Amino acid sequence: MSFFLFYQSCYGLFLFTYPISFSDRAFFCHGRTWRTMLQYGYDERTEILKKEVDPMTPKIQMKTPLVEMDGDEMTRILWKMIKDILILPYIDLKSEYYDLGMKHRDDTDDEVTIESALATKKYGVAVKCATITANAARVKEYDLKKMWPSPNGTIRAILDGTVFRKPIMVKGIAPLVRNWEKPITIARHAFGDIYKNTELRIPAGGKAELVVTDAQGRQTRRTIHEFKGEGITQGIFNTDESIRSYAHACFDYALSVKEDLWFATKDTVSKIYDHRFKDIFQEIYDKEYKTRYEACGIEYFYTLIDDVVARIIRSRGGMVWACKNYDGDVMSDMMATAFGSLAMMTSVLVSPDGNYEYEAAHGTVQRHYYKYLKGEKTSTNPVATIFAWSGALRKRGELDGLPELQTYADALEKATIDTIESGTMTGDLYSMSSLPEKVKVNSEEFLNAIAGRLEKLLA
Image (cartoon, rainbow, N blue to C red; front, side):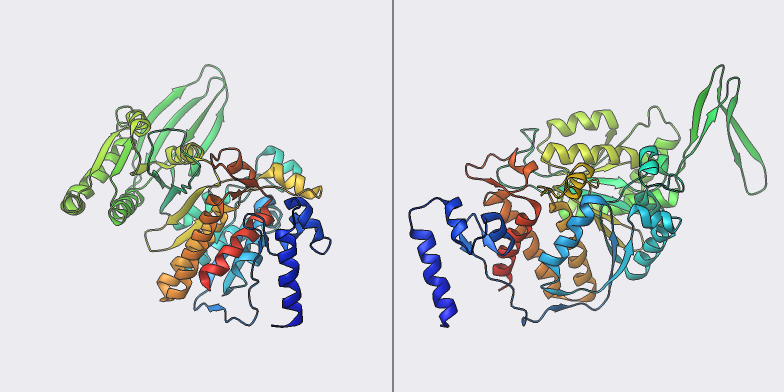
Protein backbone atom coordinates (compact mmCIF):
# COMPACT_ATOMS: atom_id res chain seq x y z
CA MET A 1 0.00 0.00 0.00
CA SER A 2 1.42 3.38 -0.94
CA PHE A 3 1.93 6.09 1.69
CA PHE A 4 -0.79 8.16 0.00
CA LEU A 5 -3.39 5.39 0.21
CA PHE A 6 -2.38 4.63 3.82
CA TYR A 7 -2.80 8.31 4.66
CA GLN A 8 -6.17 8.46 2.95
CA SER A 9 -7.38 5.35 4.81
CA CYS A 10 -6.36 6.72 8.22
CA TYR A 11 -7.77 10.12 7.36
CA GLY A 12 -11.09 8.58 6.31
CA LEU A 13 -11.22 6.51 9.53
CA PHE A 14 -10.80 9.71 11.55
CA LEU A 15 -13.55 11.47 9.68
CA PHE A 16 -16.14 8.73 10.02
CA THR A 17 -15.45 7.76 13.65
CA TYR A 18 -14.84 11.16 15.18
CA PRO A 19 -18.08 12.32 16.91
CA ILE A 20 -18.92 15.30 14.71
CA SER A 21 -21.87 15.96 12.44
CA PHE A 22 -21.90 14.89 8.80
CA SER A 23 -21.83 18.47 7.57
CA ASP A 24 -18.88 19.25 9.89
CA ARG A 25 -16.99 16.23 8.54
CA ALA A 26 -17.19 17.60 5.05
CA PHE A 27 -15.14 20.65 5.94
CA PHE A 28 -12.27 18.42 7.07
CA CYS A 29 -12.14 16.94 3.57
CA HIS A 30 -9.35 19.14 2.19
CA GLY A 31 -11.48 22.24 2.73
CA ARG A 32 -14.28 21.14 0.41
CA THR A 33 -17.96 21.30 1.29
CA TRP A 34 -19.99 18.07 1.04
CA ARG A 35 -21.51 19.24 -2.25
CA THR A 36 -18.06 19.71 -3.76
CA MET A 37 -17.00 16.33 -2.39
CA LEU A 38 -19.95 14.68 -4.13
CA GLN A 39 -18.85 16.30 -7.37
CA TYR A 40 -15.45 14.65 -6.95
CA GLY A 41 -16.93 11.26 -6.13
CA TYR A 42 -18.31 11.53 -2.59
CA ASP A 43 -21.43 9.47 -1.92
CA GLU A 44 -23.28 11.24 0.90
CA ARG A 45 -25.81 8.43 1.38
CA THR A 46 -23.22 5.80 2.32
CA GLU A 47 -20.46 8.18 3.41
CA ILE A 48 -17.74 6.56 1.32
CA LEU A 49 -15.41 7.82 -1.33
CA LYS A 50 -16.52 6.27 -4.62
CA LYS A 51 -13.94 4.56 -6.77
CA GLU A 52 -13.02 6.63 -9.81
CA VAL A 53 -13.08 5.04 -13.26
CA ASP A 54 -9.63 3.72 -14.14
CA PRO A 55 -8.57 5.66 -17.25
CA MET A 56 -6.66 2.55 -18.38
CA THR A 57 -9.81 0.39 -18.39
CA PRO A 58 -10.69 -0.51 -22.03
CA LYS A 59 -13.80 1.26 -23.27
CA ILE A 60 -16.70 -0.55 -24.95
CA GLN A 61 -16.27 -0.29 -28.71
CA MET A 62 -19.11 0.50 -31.11
CA LYS A 63 -19.41 -0.71 -34.70
CA THR A 64 -22.04 1.66 -36.11
CA PRO A 65 -22.69 5.29 -35.14
CA LEU A 66 -25.98 6.30 -33.60
CA VAL A 67 -27.54 9.64 -34.47
CA GLU A 68 -27.17 12.19 -31.68
CA MET A 69 -29.65 15.08 -31.71
CA ASP A 70 -28.70 17.80 -29.23
CA GLY A 71 -31.37 20.13 -27.86
CA ASP A 72 -32.19 23.25 -25.89
CA GLU A 73 -31.90 24.98 -22.54
CA MET A 74 -31.53 22.96 -19.33
CA THR A 75 -31.86 19.61 -21.06
CA ARG A 76 -28.92 20.58 -23.30
CA ILE A 77 -26.84 21.20 -20.16
CA LEU A 78 -27.89 17.83 -18.71
CA TRP A 79 -27.13 16.15 -22.05
CA LYS A 80 -23.45 17.07 -21.82
CA MET A 81 -23.25 16.17 -18.12
CA ILE A 82 -24.74 12.72 -18.76
CA LYS A 83 -22.25 12.07 -21.55
CA ASP A 84 -19.27 13.30 -19.52
CA ILE A 85 -20.15 11.53 -16.27
CA LEU A 86 -22.01 8.35 -17.29
CA ILE A 87 -21.20 7.49 -20.91
CA LEU A 88 -17.81 8.63 -22.15
CA PRO A 89 -15.82 7.04 -19.28
CA TYR A 90 -17.12 3.62 -20.39
CA ILE A 91 -17.91 3.80 -24.12
CA ASP A 92 -15.87 4.82 -27.14
CA LEU A 93 -18.93 6.67 -28.39
CA LYS A 94 -19.54 6.77 -32.13
CA SER A 95 -22.28 9.24 -33.03
CA GLU A 96 -23.30 11.43 -35.93
CA TYR A 97 -24.03 14.73 -34.22
CA TYR A 98 -26.82 17.17 -35.13
CA ASP A 99 -27.41 20.38 -33.21
CA LEU A 100 -31.17 20.84 -32.97
CA GLY A 101 -30.84 23.82 -30.65
CA MET A 102 -33.33 26.56 -31.52
CA LYS A 103 -30.71 29.03 -32.81
CA HIS A 104 -29.00 26.47 -35.07
CA ARG A 105 -32.33 25.33 -36.48
CA ASP A 106 -33.04 28.97 -37.32
CA ASP A 107 -29.58 29.46 -38.85
CA THR A 108 -30.09 26.44 -41.13
CA ASP A 109 -33.73 27.24 -41.98
CA ASP A 110 -34.60 24.04 -40.10
CA GLU A 111 -32.70 21.90 -42.61
CA VAL A 112 -30.70 20.38 -39.75
CA THR A 113 -33.87 18.77 -38.40
CA ILE A 114 -34.60 17.11 -41.74
CA GLU A 115 -30.97 15.98 -42.02
CA SER A 116 -31.10 14.38 -38.57
CA ALA A 117 -34.23 12.42 -39.49
CA LEU A 118 -32.66 11.20 -42.76
CA ALA A 119 -29.54 10.18 -40.84
CA THR A 120 -31.77 8.13 -38.52
CA LYS A 121 -33.11 6.29 -41.56
CA LYS A 122 -29.49 5.64 -42.60
CA TYR A 123 -28.11 4.40 -39.25
CA GLY A 124 -31.28 2.99 -37.69
CA VAL A 125 -30.89 4.33 -34.13
CA ALA A 126 -31.09 7.88 -32.79
CA VAL A 127 -31.14 9.55 -29.39
CA LYS A 128 -32.74 12.99 -29.07
CA CYS A 129 -32.52 15.72 -26.44
CA ALA A 130 -35.60 17.81 -25.61
CA THR A 131 -36.05 20.78 -27.97
CA ILE A 132 -38.01 24.03 -28.07
CA THR A 133 -41.13 24.18 -30.22
CA ALA A 134 -41.31 27.82 -31.27
CA ASN A 135 -44.28 30.01 -30.40
CA ALA A 136 -44.69 33.80 -30.65
CA ALA A 137 -42.78 34.37 -27.40
CA ARG A 138 -39.87 32.16 -28.54
CA VAL A 139 -39.68 33.91 -31.91
CA LYS A 140 -39.13 37.18 -30.05
CA GLU A 141 -36.79 35.68 -27.42
CA TYR A 142 -34.48 34.03 -29.97
CA ASP A 143 -35.00 36.60 -32.73
CA LEU A 144 -36.08 33.84 -35.13
CA LYS A 145 -36.71 34.26 -38.84
CA LYS A 146 -40.08 32.56 -38.48
CA MET A 147 -42.09 30.29 -36.20
CA TRP A 148 -40.45 26.99 -37.13
CA PRO A 149 -42.50 23.79 -36.76
CA SER A 150 -42.03 21.27 -33.97
CA PRO A 151 -38.81 19.31 -34.60
CA ASN A 152 -40.54 16.23 -33.19
CA GLY A 153 -43.36 16.69 -35.69
CA THR A 154 -40.87 17.05 -38.56
CA ILE A 155 -38.86 13.99 -37.54
CA ARG A 156 -41.96 11.85 -36.98
CA ALA A 157 -43.42 12.85 -40.35
CA ILE A 158 -40.23 11.60 -42.05
CA LEU A 159 -39.81 8.43 -39.99
CA ASP A 160 -43.54 7.66 -39.57
CA GLY A 161 -44.09 5.08 -36.86
CA THR A 162 -45.39 4.79 -33.32
CA VAL A 163 -44.17 6.41 -30.11
CA PHE A 164 -44.18 4.07 -27.10
CA ARG A 165 -44.04 5.80 -23.71
CA LYS A 166 -43.83 3.90 -20.44
CA PRO A 167 -43.55 5.22 -16.86
CA ILE A 168 -40.44 4.38 -14.83
CA MET A 169 -41.68 3.11 -11.47
CA VAL A 170 -39.50 3.34 -8.36
CA LYS A 171 -39.93 2.40 -4.71
CA GLY A 172 -41.27 5.25 -2.59
CA ILE A 173 -43.20 7.01 -5.36
CA ALA A 174 -46.71 5.59 -5.69
CA PRO A 175 -48.99 6.46 -8.64
CA LEU A 176 -51.61 9.10 -7.87
CA VAL A 177 -54.24 6.55 -8.92
CA ARG A 178 -53.96 4.18 -5.97
CA ASN A 179 -55.11 1.03 -7.76
CA TRP A 180 -52.42 1.28 -10.49
CA GLU A 181 -49.96 -1.48 -9.67
CA LYS A 182 -48.19 -1.77 -13.03
CA PRO A 183 -47.04 0.81 -15.59
CA ILE A 184 -49.35 1.71 -18.46
CA THR A 185 -47.65 2.08 -21.85
CA ILE A 186 -48.99 4.74 -24.23
CA ALA A 187 -48.64 3.80 -27.91
CA ARG A 188 -49.03 7.06 -29.83
CA HIS A 189 -49.56 7.13 -33.59
CA ALA A 190 -46.88 9.67 -34.55
CA PHE A 191 -48.07 10.60 -38.02
CA GLY A 192 -50.55 13.04 -39.52
CA ASP A 193 -53.71 14.45 -37.87
CA ILE A 194 -53.40 17.99 -36.50
CA TYR A 195 -49.58 17.78 -36.46
CA LYS A 196 -49.53 18.00 -40.26
CA ASN A 197 -52.68 20.06 -40.66
CA THR A 198 -53.58 22.93 -42.96
CA GLU A 199 -55.52 25.73 -41.30
CA LEU A 200 -56.99 29.08 -42.27
CA ARG A 201 -58.66 32.12 -40.75
CA ILE A 202 -62.08 32.63 -42.33
CA PRO A 203 -63.38 36.16 -42.99
CA ALA A 204 -66.96 37.08 -42.17
CA GLY A 205 -69.32 35.67 -44.79
CA GLY A 206 -66.77 33.11 -45.95
CA LYS A 207 -67.53 29.52 -46.90
CA ALA A 208 -65.22 26.60 -46.05
CA GLU A 209 -65.31 23.50 -48.25
CA LEU A 210 -63.56 20.14 -48.27
CA VAL A 211 -62.47 19.34 -51.82
CA VAL A 212 -60.88 16.07 -53.01
CA THR A 213 -59.57 15.70 -56.57
CA ASP A 214 -59.02 12.11 -57.71
CA ALA A 215 -56.40 10.82 -60.17
CA GLN A 216 -58.72 11.46 -63.13
CA GLY A 217 -59.34 15.08 -62.07
CA ARG A 218 -62.84 14.52 -60.74
CA GLN A 219 -63.73 16.54 -57.67
CA THR A 220 -65.80 15.68 -54.62
CA ARG A 221 -66.97 18.61 -52.48
CA ARG A 222 -68.42 18.88 -49.01
CA THR A 223 -69.40 22.09 -47.27
CA ILE A 224 -67.71 22.40 -43.91
CA HIS A 225 -69.42 25.58 -42.76
CA GLU A 226 -70.87 28.85 -44.06
CA PHE A 227 -69.66 31.61 -41.76
CA LYS A 228 -71.70 34.64 -40.77
CA GLY A 229 -68.91 36.13 -38.69
CA GLU A 230 -65.18 35.49 -38.64
CA GLY A 231 -63.95 31.98 -37.86
CA ILE A 232 -61.31 29.30 -38.37
CA THR A 233 -61.00 25.98 -40.17
CA GLN A 234 -58.43 23.22 -40.55
CA GLY A 235 -57.84 20.16 -42.68
CA ILE A 236 -56.20 16.99 -41.36
CA PHE A 237 -55.30 13.67 -42.96
CA ASN A 238 -53.95 10.20 -42.47
CA THR A 239 -53.14 7.29 -44.75
CA ASP A 240 -54.16 3.63 -44.71
CA GLU A 241 -50.49 2.69 -45.02
CA SER A 242 -49.54 4.62 -41.88
CA ILE A 243 -52.52 3.34 -39.91
CA ARG A 244 -51.66 -0.24 -40.88
CA SER A 245 -48.02 0.13 -39.82
CA TYR A 246 -49.23 1.70 -36.57
CA ALA A 247 -51.57 -1.23 -35.92
CA HIS A 248 -48.80 -3.77 -36.59
CA ALA A 249 -46.42 -1.90 -34.27
CA CYS A 250 -49.00 -1.90 -31.47
CA PHE A 251 -49.96 -5.56 -31.88
CA ASP A 252 -46.31 -6.63 -32.04
CA TYR A 253 -45.25 -4.56 -29.05
CA ALA A 254 -48.08 -5.82 -26.84
CA LEU A 255 -47.25 -9.37 -27.87
CA SER A 256 -43.56 -8.86 -27.05
CA VAL A 257 -44.33 -7.63 -23.51
CA LYS A 258 -47.30 -10.03 -23.07
CA GLU A 259 -49.75 -7.28 -22.15
CA ASP A 260 -53.31 -6.57 -23.33
CA LEU A 261 -53.71 -3.99 -26.09
CA TRP A 262 -56.46 -1.40 -25.69
CA PHE A 263 -57.44 0.94 -28.53
CA ALA A 264 -60.01 3.72 -28.67
CA THR A 265 -61.28 6.42 -31.04
CA LYS A 266 -64.50 8.42 -31.33
CA ASP A 267 -65.97 6.48 -34.25
CA THR A 268 -69.54 7.23 -33.20
CA VAL A 269 -68.93 10.89 -34.08
CA SER A 270 -66.19 10.59 -36.71
CA LYS A 271 -67.90 7.92 -38.83
CA ILE A 272 -65.32 7.95 -41.65
CA TYR A 273 -62.04 9.27 -40.23
CA ASP A 274 -61.95 7.57 -36.81
CA HIS A 275 -63.96 4.60 -38.04
CA ARG A 276 -61.21 3.87 -40.58
CA PHE A 277 -58.72 3.43 -37.70
CA LYS A 278 -61.14 1.05 -35.97
CA ASP A 279 -61.76 -1.01 -39.12
CA ILE A 280 -58.07 -1.39 -40.03
CA PHE A 281 -57.12 -2.46 -36.50
CA GLN A 282 -59.89 -5.05 -36.37
CA GLU A 283 -59.09 -6.42 -39.84
CA ILE A 284 -55.39 -6.86 -39.01
CA TYR A 285 -56.13 -8.39 -35.60
CA ASP A 286 -58.58 -10.94 -36.99
CA LYS A 287 -56.28 -11.99 -39.85
CA GLU A 288 -52.84 -11.95 -38.22
CA TYR A 289 -52.93 -11.71 -34.44
CA LYS A 290 -56.06 -13.23 -32.92
CA THR A 291 -54.69 -16.77 -32.69
CA ARG A 292 -51.33 -15.58 -31.38
CA TYR A 293 -52.97 -13.38 -28.74
CA GLU A 294 -55.19 -16.20 -27.54
CA ALA A 295 -52.20 -18.54 -27.30
CA CYS A 296 -50.33 -15.91 -25.27
CA GLY A 297 -53.30 -15.30 -22.95
CA ILE A 298 -53.69 -11.62 -23.81
CA GLU A 299 -56.51 -9.75 -25.55
CA TYR A 300 -57.18 -6.90 -27.95
CA PHE A 301 -59.92 -4.60 -26.66
CA TYR A 302 -61.59 -1.73 -28.56
CA THR A 303 -63.91 0.91 -27.12
CA LEU A 304 -64.67 4.63 -27.35
CA ILE A 305 -62.04 7.11 -26.14
CA ASP A 306 -64.19 8.47 -23.28
CA ASP A 307 -65.03 4.94 -22.12
CA VAL A 308 -61.41 3.81 -22.19
CA VAL A 309 -60.33 6.76 -20.03
CA ALA A 310 -62.84 5.71 -17.37
CA ARG A 311 -61.70 2.08 -17.61
CA ILE A 312 -58.01 3.05 -17.37
CA ILE A 313 -58.65 4.96 -14.14
CA ARG A 314 -60.39 1.93 -12.60
CA SER A 315 -57.77 -0.56 -13.85
CA ARG A 316 -54.70 -1.97 -12.12
CA GLY A 317 -52.50 -0.95 -15.06
CA GLY A 318 -50.29 -3.29 -17.02
CA MET A 319 -51.67 -2.74 -20.52
CA VAL A 320 -50.61 -1.05 -23.76
CA TRP A 321 -52.99 1.81 -24.58
CA ALA A 322 -52.98 2.65 -28.31
CA CYS A 323 -53.92 6.28 -28.98
CA LYS A 324 -54.32 8.41 -32.07
CA ASN A 325 -51.74 11.19 -32.43
CA TYR A 326 -53.42 13.97 -30.40
CA ASP A 327 -54.86 11.60 -27.80
CA GLY A 328 -51.42 10.09 -27.28
CA ASP A 329 -49.82 13.52 -26.95
CA VAL A 330 -52.20 14.48 -24.15
CA MET A 331 -52.51 11.14 -22.39
CA SER A 332 -48.77 10.43 -22.26
CA ASP A 333 -48.20 13.61 -20.23
CA MET A 334 -51.15 12.79 -18.01
CA MET A 335 -49.83 9.27 -17.49
CA ALA A 336 -46.31 10.47 -16.71
CA THR A 337 -47.60 12.93 -14.12
CA ALA A 338 -49.96 10.40 -12.56
CA PHE A 339 -47.12 7.91 -12.18
CA GLY A 340 -44.81 10.52 -10.65
CA SER A 341 -43.03 12.92 -12.99
CA LEU A 342 -42.70 13.88 -16.64
CA ALA A 343 -39.01 13.11 -16.20
CA MET A 344 -39.80 9.52 -15.22
CA MET A 345 -40.97 8.11 -18.55
CA THR A 346 -39.25 6.30 -21.40
CA SER A 347 -40.06 7.24 -24.99
CA VAL A 348 -39.13 5.56 -28.26
CA LEU A 349 -40.35 6.09 -31.81
CA VAL A 350 -40.49 2.81 -33.77
CA SER A 351 -40.81 3.24 -37.53
CA PRO A 352 -42.26 0.68 -39.97
CA ASP A 353 -38.87 0.09 -41.61
CA GLY A 354 -37.09 -0.70 -38.36
CA ASN A 355 -35.69 2.67 -37.24
CA TYR A 356 -35.66 3.74 -33.58
CA GLU A 357 -35.51 7.21 -32.06
CA TYR A 358 -35.20 7.46 -28.26
CA GLU A 359 -35.97 10.71 -26.49
CA ALA A 360 -36.93 12.32 -23.18
CA ALA A 361 -40.70 12.77 -23.08
CA HIS A 362 -40.66 16.25 -21.55
CA GLY A 363 -39.76 19.86 -22.32
CA THR A 364 -36.54 21.83 -22.04
CA VAL A 365 -37.08 22.91 -18.38
CA GLN A 366 -36.93 26.61 -19.20
CA ARG A 367 -37.34 27.86 -15.61
CA HIS A 368 -34.35 25.84 -14.39
CA TYR A 369 -32.30 27.03 -17.36
CA TYR A 370 -32.79 30.66 -16.41
CA LYS A 371 -31.57 29.81 -12.89
CA TYR A 372 -28.58 28.04 -14.39
CA LEU A 373 -27.71 31.13 -16.42
CA LYS A 374 -27.63 33.11 -13.17
CA GLY A 375 -25.06 30.68 -11.80
CA GLU A 376 -27.49 28.81 -9.56
CA LYS A 377 -27.39 25.03 -9.09
CA THR A 378 -30.61 23.31 -10.16
CA SER A 379 -32.14 20.03 -9.08
CA THR A 380 -33.37 19.03 -12.54
CA ASN A 381 -34.38 15.40 -13.03
CA PRO A 382 -32.27 13.78 -15.81
CA VAL A 383 -33.77 10.27 -15.61
CA ALA A 384 -35.78 10.37 -18.85
CA THR A 385 -32.71 11.61 -20.73
CA ILE A 386 -30.53 8.91 -19.14
CA PHE A 387 -33.05 6.26 -20.22
CA ALA A 388 -33.12 7.74 -23.74
CA TRP A 389 -29.36 7.16 -23.94
CA SER A 390 -29.57 3.69 -22.38
CA GLY A 391 -32.39 2.69 -24.75
CA ALA A 392 -30.49 3.87 -27.82
CA LEU A 393 -27.24 2.21 -26.75
CA ARG A 394 -29.03 -1.05 -25.91
CA LYS A 395 -30.74 -1.10 -29.31
CA ARG A 396 -27.44 -0.27 -31.07
CA GLY A 397 -25.84 -3.17 -29.19
CA GLU A 398 -28.72 -5.48 -30.11
CA LEU A 399 -28.59 -4.60 -33.82
CA ASP A 400 -24.78 -4.78 -34.00
CA GLY A 401 -24.34 -7.91 -31.88
CA LEU A 402 -22.57 -6.15 -29.00
CA PRO A 403 -23.76 -7.79 -25.75
CA GLU A 404 -21.33 -5.66 -23.70
CA LEU A 405 -23.14 -2.51 -24.90
CA GLN A 406 -26.48 -4.03 -23.88
CA THR A 407 -25.05 -4.99 -20.48
CA TYR A 408 -23.83 -1.42 -19.98
CA ALA A 409 -27.30 -0.03 -20.80
CA ASP A 410 -28.95 -2.41 -18.32
CA ALA A 411 -26.42 -1.44 -15.63
CA LEU A 412 -26.96 2.28 -16.26
CA GLU A 413 -30.71 1.94 -15.75
CA LYS A 414 -30.27 -0.19 -12.63
CA ALA A 415 -27.77 2.26 -11.16
CA THR A 416 -30.21 5.11 -11.78
CA ILE A 417 -33.15 3.35 -10.11
CA ASP A 418 -31.01 2.08 -7.23
CA THR A 419 -29.79 5.63 -6.56
CA ILE A 420 -33.35 6.92 -6.25
CA GLU A 421 -34.51 3.97 -4.16
CA SER A 422 -31.54 4.45 -1.80
CA GLY A 423 -32.86 7.95 -1.04
CA THR A 424 -30.75 10.19 -3.28
CA MET A 425 -32.95 12.12 -5.70
CA THR A 426 -33.74 15.40 -7.42
CA GLY A 427 -36.26 17.90 -6.07
CA ASP A 428 -39.30 16.75 -8.05
CA LEU A 429 -38.95 13.21 -6.70
CA TYR A 430 -38.00 14.36 -3.19
CA SER A 431 -41.33 16.17 -2.83
CA MET A 432 -43.23 12.98 -3.71
CA SER A 433 -41.15 10.20 -2.20
CA SER A 434 -42.41 8.38 0.89
CA LEU A 435 -38.98 6.94 1.72
CA PRO A 436 -38.16 7.58 5.41
CA GLU A 437 -34.58 8.61 4.65
CA LYS A 438 -34.03 10.75 1.60
CA VAL A 439 -31.93 13.68 0.48
CA LYS A 440 -32.48 16.26 -2.25
CA VAL A 441 -29.41 16.86 -4.42
CA ASN A 442 -28.68 18.95 -7.47
CA SER A 443 -28.40 17.42 -10.92
CA GLU A 444 -24.64 17.00 -10.98
CA GLU A 445 -24.62 15.41 -7.53
CA PHE A 446 -27.34 13.02 -8.64
CA LEU A 447 -25.39 12.00 -11.74
CA ASN A 448 -22.24 11.43 -9.69
CA ALA A 449 -24.18 9.27 -7.23
CA ILE A 450 -25.38 7.17 -10.18
CA ALA A 451 -21.81 6.98 -11.48
CA GLY A 452 -20.64 5.45 -8.20
CA ARG A 453 -23.17 2.65 -8.43
CA LEU A 454 -22.59 2.17 -12.15
CA GLU A 455 -18.86 1.66 -11.57
CA LYS A 456 -19.58 -1.11 -9.05
CA LEU A 457 -22.10 -2.82 -11.35
CA LEU A 458 -19.62 -2.84 -14.24
CA ALA A 459 -16.63 -3.91 -12.15
